Image (cartoon, rainbow, N blue to C red):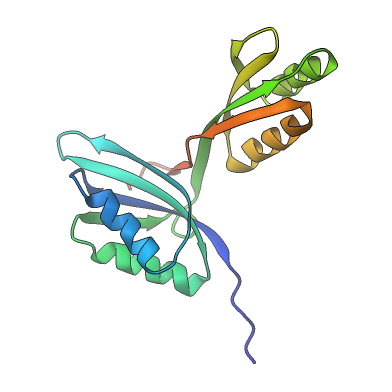
Length: 170
């Protein structure tokens, strides 16, 4: 029996026409085939060309990821598909707002940890903080996990944004 292919995390950037229904078509491709999306961000990147960039984080075997990329490339409003995990060296960042409620030592510890993680306090009351943190998804996960025992109340995350290093355009 051949060894089972390992499931890998991939960040895929997709340049598309900025028009109604494009995001639904891209998402439909994933849901219709049972592929999971871990993170999804989208925004217009060129107003004159009316193009948007969709950044998708997904998991799959190398064969499944190749299928996803090929199917994305065949969609009519798609201009370019780049697997930032394989095709290039890239930078990934995410932003999160993290609400922590607590008093006394827990409050002091939350502030100490936020300083260590370079998180900013953007709102404070007598019994709570809202921190803003930017970094890799792993950094944000670590910060959130450390805040759990200190009174984590809520988390809101942007999703991953990524870009290739170097002078080349997507």
